[in-house]
Image (cartoon, rainbow over all chains, first blue to last red; front, side, top):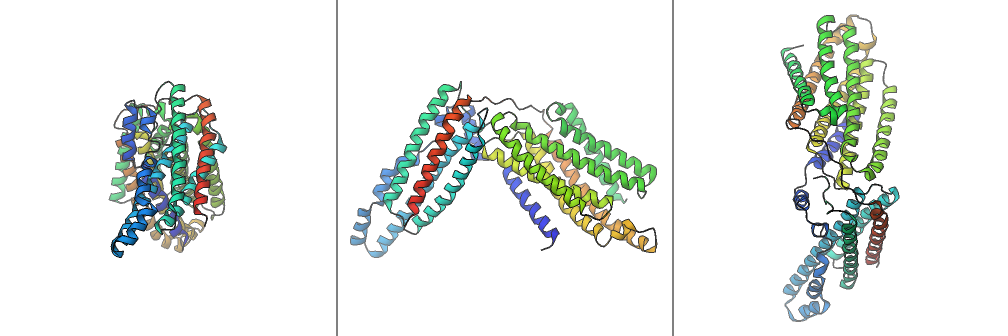
Length: 188
Length: 279
C-alpha cells in the first residue's frame, strides 16, 4: 500500500469517527430535556431496573422447567422452548449491561461535576469499563452456547442489585450535599 | 488563472467578508478570539495574495514566496483555533479540564514533533516544506478534534452548536487538504522536483505545463471545499453566540468519597464475571 493510500484511509477513518461523534444522540437529548426540567438525578439516571425482574426470569429458566419440558413435550417443542429460554437470558444479560452502564455513567457525571479529579481514579475506571466490555462479551457467548449455569447468572444479578442500592444511597447523599439536581447530560 | 478559478476566488472573498462580518457583529472575538483571528487572517491573506498577483504577477518569485508563507501562517493560526476550541467548553469543568488538557497537549506535542521531523526530511523547496507542514498540522487538527469529541462523549458533555459547526468545518477542510496536499506534494517532490531546482532551461518550460495542470486541479478542489467550509461557518453564526456558562459543581468531597467506592464495586463486578467464565 502506498503512502497516499494510507493517508487517505487514515483521513477517512478519522473523519468517519468525527462525524459519528458530531451527530447528537437523540436518546440522550430526550433524557437531557427531562433533567433540565428539574427531575432529580435518582429518577433521571435509572440505576438498575433489570435486575428486579430476576425472580421472573429464574422461574422461566429454572432447571425443573427444563426437565419437565424434555420429559413431557415432543422433542421439537422442547428444543424450541430451550432456544427461546436462551434468548430471554441473553436479553436479560443485556439489561444487566444497561444497568452497569448507568452506574458507570454516574461515576463519570460525578467526575465531570467535580472541581478536581484524580487521574488514577479516572484511568482505573476507564480500564474497568473496558475490561467489563470484554468479559461481558465472553459471558454472552457462553450463555448463547448454553454453557453457563443459571446459578452463576443469579450471583451476577445480586451483585448488580447490591451495587444499584449502594448507588441510590450515594445519590441521595449527593442530592443532600449539592444545592440542586445534578444534570445527566451536562450542559444541554 | 481560468474563469472557474477566478469565479471561485471571488466567491471565497465574498464568503470570507461575510464570515468576518458575522464574527464581528456577533462579537465572537469575546468568546473565541483565536477563531476570530483565524477568520480575519484568512481574509487579509486572500486580499494580500490577490494584490501581489495583480502587482507582481502570479508567476513571480515574490508571489510564490508570499503564497506559500501565507499557507503556513493560516495553518498555524488554524491550529491555535483548534486549541481554543478544546478549551472553549471544557474550562467550565475544572476537574476534567485539568485531566483533558494534558491529554490534548501531549497529543499536540506528538504531532508537532512528527511534523518537524517529516518536514526536515523533505527535498529543499518552500512549496514542499509548506505542503508537508500543512498536511501534518491538518492531520494533527483532525486527530485532536477526534480526541476532544471522544472526551466530551466519555464525560457526557454536550457540544455547543457553534462549537459543533466550527469543528465540522475545520474537520472537512483539513480532510480535503490532507488528501489533496499529499497528492500535490508527491508530484512536487517526485516527477516535478527538478522544476524547483533547475534554471529556466527548455526542460523547465516543458514541466511548466504539467505544473500548471496540477495547480489548476488542486486550486479547484481546494477552493470549492474551502467555500463550502466558509458556508458551514457562516450558517453556524447566523444566530447570536452565547458564551457557555459555568457549570454548577459538586463539593470536592463527593468525588473523593464516591469515586474510589464506585471503582471498587466495578472491580468486584469484573472479578465476578471472571469467576463466571472459569470452567
